[in-house]
Structure formats: structure tokens, C-alpha cells
Image 1 (cartoon, helix red, strand yellow):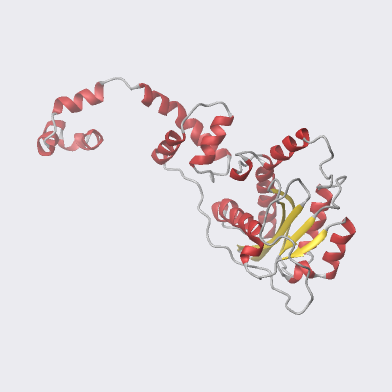
Image 2 (cartoon, rainbow, N blue to C red):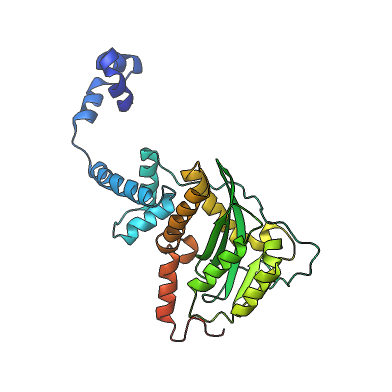
Length: 297
């Protein structure tokens, strides 16, 4: 009521509005002249911090992650307060849309067994990687992006972008992942994907074997067989592609993806990791484990 009167008082005057609304003018004047409360002062201090955290994290965080980041920085604030102030500021987290499959199943060739059976859990780094492809619509045509994610930490260990779905897209992402984990034993690694021809290609499976990894392929042929990789693709599309587009072509998608992966690995808070970034989660694991990270289970 007070806000309504304040908004329209220049046109109609306070007393006439109060008569129509049956609202005591003294109540309005008291409300508008009293000093700010402690809560109001605290809100004004928090709003810039909330906006900063939201902006610094690609404008994709919802109340949970903004709240978690503020607490990591030493701000003692309640989650409900963050949610309320974000609503007042008109900011919110991104909402994921539907995913679309980009790989084409190879129904002719013999495929490896499904060693995961939809159990996307790992006890250490380099025990289970998941791989998948997604697509980006640009002004100059489609751009396809391949990702490989370590299930233990949700870290993106390899990625690659290309204008062609049939190029060495998946293999280049694999090479990046192997390079990123250089010096670490991949002998206990399971590499899981869907039944796309890119992942069943001879060169791809041979490269995995050379690295000491075991190939696993979803047996049922739906998105649940590679749900964690599909989930990452959904985040990528929501937090980067739809949030920052439109895109002109391969070059700007590639550069933006590079920046996104760096943020995702080193700064983005993950609910599954106790609101920690993947790199921090892996570093904590390495400090706690007396044995090498790639030791046998």
C-alpha cells in the first residue's frame, strides 16, 4: 500500500489516495519517515554481493549456488534471504531445456558390453569417463561439440568442436582427455558412451586400448544409458549456448567453450560435490589419499 501511494502521490496527492483506499495518511507518513530497519540495511549490503556472485558466474546460478558461494566467502546469510533478494533484484538461475541426441547408433557392428548399467559412480579419478556429443546452431551452420567428463569429480577432461559430425571430433576430444591426465595410470579406467558410430570407430577403440582403458557402451540405446553425459550437455546448452548466444560460427563457439570449461572445472559449484568445483574436489581427494590417485580399487 505504501509503495502504491509513493508511486502515484505526484499525480493524485497523498490524502486523496488515502481517502479512496481507506488508509490513514498518518500511517503512510510514519512508514516513509522512519529510519531503515536493521533488516533493510542488511539487505542493501547483501544485494551488491548477490549480484556480483551471480554476474561472476555467467549469470546462471540460482539461489542455492549463490547462497553456497556467499558462505564460502564468509558471508553469514540464510538461503531464504538470498532467494528473497534475488527475486527483488529480478535475477534467477538458468533453466535447462530438453536434450537432443546427436550421435547415430551403429546397429550393424558388434559393440562392447555395458559395464556401467546406469550406475554413474566412481570411487576415484580416472575410473569412469563418460563421453557424448552435442550441437550448436550458428549463423554459418551447425557446430558439433564433443565432451568427456570424469564421473568422480564431474570434471571435463576433454572436449573438441568441429563443423562436421563425422570428422575426428570424438577422437580429438579423447586425445585431449588422455593428455590432460598425462602421467596418471589409466589402467583402471572405463570409458562409457552411447552406441554412436563415432565411439565404435576402430581408431577410437584402438586409442582407448592403447591408453589401457576399457570400452563400455550403453545397451538399451536411450539417454538414460548415458545420463551423466547427457546431463552435462544440458548444462552446457543452458548455461552457455542459450544464455550467451546467438553464435556466428565455429570460432566464437570454440572460444566461449574454452572459457566455459575453465569456469566449470575450477569455479562452478556442484551440488553433487558438496558445493565445490571439480578441481578443488580432486585436490582434496589427492591430499586425503596416501596412495597414488590411480591405484587399483
